[in-house]
Amino acid sequence: MNIERLNPITEEEAAAMVSRQTRDDLAERVMKTTPDDVPTSVRPGWSGRRRLLVGIPLAVTVAAAAMIAVSIAEPDQRVGPVSVGPNRAEAAALSFRKEGDSLVVTVNDPVADPARYKKEFAAYGMDIDLTLAPVSPRRAGTLVFMETSEGGHLETILAEGRCGSEVCGVGVKVPMDYKGHARIVFGRAARPGEMYDEGPGDVPGEGVGLPDVPGHTVAEAWTVLEERKITRVLYRYVFRGSDRPYPDGLTRDQVKPEWYVHDALAGTDDQVILFVGPEKP
Image 1 (tube, rainbow, N blue to C red):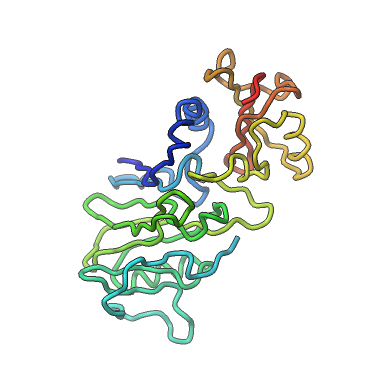
Image 2: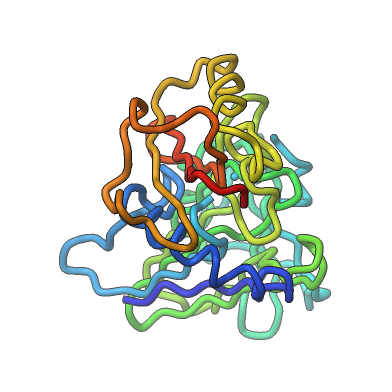
């Protein structure tokens, strides 16, 4: 099983990669790197391939429907399902358009029940689950995560500049004879107060309501978290690129309020992870 990050990084991100490596390694120890509704393991007996399309952690305000999965190529024609299609009395949650030997799938209804997405895929004989996860407003409508079974392949439709300086996945192209299983997650803009995982190009800390957090003191971060009634906080130590002498993290009693916050990330179950240290980042 492979997890690939498809979003290329900017020069600024590359320059900061070395200093952020320790933070990323630490985050991987204490939290899962996919949204809550993204599978964290492949089903027993099912070998597959997983692609994580945003940076750690994952990650994600209801955007316009057209923003959720936009094809960058003009379709050859619209096609109907090979079996009984969606109820005509109810607008389709998905749109399927033929492009060569594949279908370009777009989302018409970004807040539909995932069961509707699955049903409409099934009408084309496809076993595909599609869900939505909160992301930053700038990444709403982009492809966050994709997992496919062995022997199956879905193509990611990319759009340069869709997420600022990064190239983002904005849609999925599925072969018409696709018989594998896939799970796909698109981003929806986070609702007010909802935490989400950051992706490449997002502002550090914005996913937990602490935008531009690097350089702020721990005391300042505590004030904001208390205002938001966030009490579940994990602390990770950062000092000149190392987590020593606290490789397993710190308790709140060990954290000094005059220390600085290097980053703040969304954890699992409404938890926040603060990377803190005595030196200003």
